[in-house]
Image (cartoon, rainbow, N blue to C red):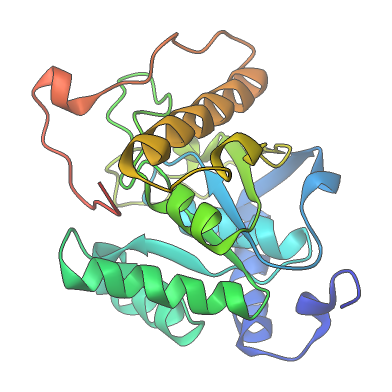
Length: 247
């Protein structure tokens, strides 16, 4: 596969790009940091931070601009929006239910994408961060499970500025004046230590904690400030989590 062949090959993504990108480009200026780290071939998991309902649209545009057709594991509530939901379903995105058999079905669907050499975007937090300062919170194990069980890379990423386009829990877009969104792509996480033994819950939790630290470090680089030493844990703050991907 040649570099950027995914964006050059005719697909429904062309329609989405023509429909979405002109409007988004009017509202947003993207500043990319280390875009060369985005794998141009093969399957991998892209694991970004998550603090706005508009994140999937932003990261979808980012992936396309960097040469890959984006497929997502996104919380099912996003699919209830008539327009966004139609675009997500038609382009092969994967709705993630809160728990149960449908959640496992989503994991199997993501694995199918992996087998076809496609990227899959998974928000390891499972829902919008509860951290009051929008830092990444404690992660779920779904993203790491896919990477370890399928033997593919996992690439952390972070973006900052999306909250100006749509705030956390916001429902309305603020298109003007034009916003700047910084995006940084990290190096693939070194998973060699986790591939030697069984992929049990303890391994997944430890690897996921390392992933969330990597995402927080990338976000700290964009924000120009130090990330909290520990990830926000909703359970410790009496908060109920929604939109779970995996335990």
